[in-house]
Image 1: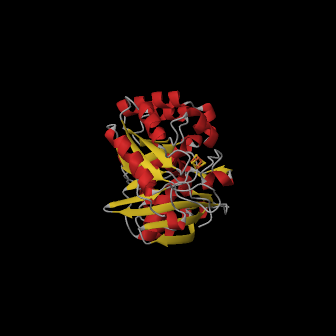
Image 2: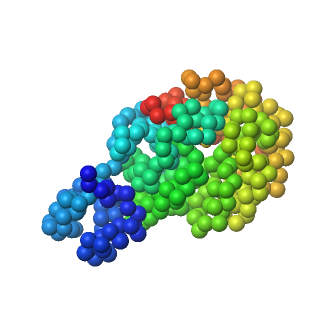
Image 3: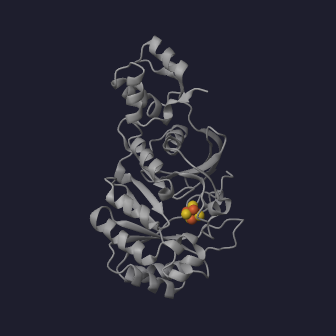
Length: 338
Ligand code: SF4
């Protein structure tokens, strides 16, 4: 089986072309064809000589992800089931809102962290994605919708800090002007609060935005619903989040509101106490129900009350409009069954 050239980062591509006797700039030409011009084989690369195209074709493939399923929703959300080279499948979501075109990518096939309210958690982990498989979700969906993506969020299947090396390499392709050209400040990594990973991102030169899927301001309750919280205390998460907000980008805290679980005024008060002194924004996400999970979305009135309490406590807070929930494309609804 031929090696897939798409697996190469730009650096690796340069080394590879030099190792087969070509000039280094050829790597950039090929990279652009693969990531920007959607070339499906080397024969389309018309600024390479015919002999070179044939030689590359003998050595490499440039296979990308395949669209195996698509569900559209009227509100501008599309959910894609994408097939990987080894036949495994993942889901990614495209959302259109105003001028913003956001693609929500997966970084793992499934997820090992088992948050109780999340459909992805139910399926467990199959494997990590390679960098090119993460970046290719953006390319394939852009091509399918015929629109340029403006924002990329790592909020699909999986936890980015459990696959950090590949996520960083994917960010290189996504943000490179020779790759997909989405600005670093328009990319967001969302984590359940893995402190080690947050620290690594803080220390790295990467300028991506950071979102923490907080959901509970009470330590015990958080541990009950989110097993990863047993090893990552709220105190430690807050310390790194504060440093990230002060030194890099303002952190967003995501709070999935679940009926009768974390939607009381007392929960809002606890949240305000927890976030005191941390420059941040709060995204309230009314729970997206899933047929395989028993949890429910709170009533609008309840959500409004919670929201107003946070607002009156001088927090920047938005209620995230639920996009894609009818097609099970909302936060926490991806389970590989488009
Ligand atoms: S919420 Fe995120 S970390 Fe938790 S199980 Fe779902 S995908 Fe994994």
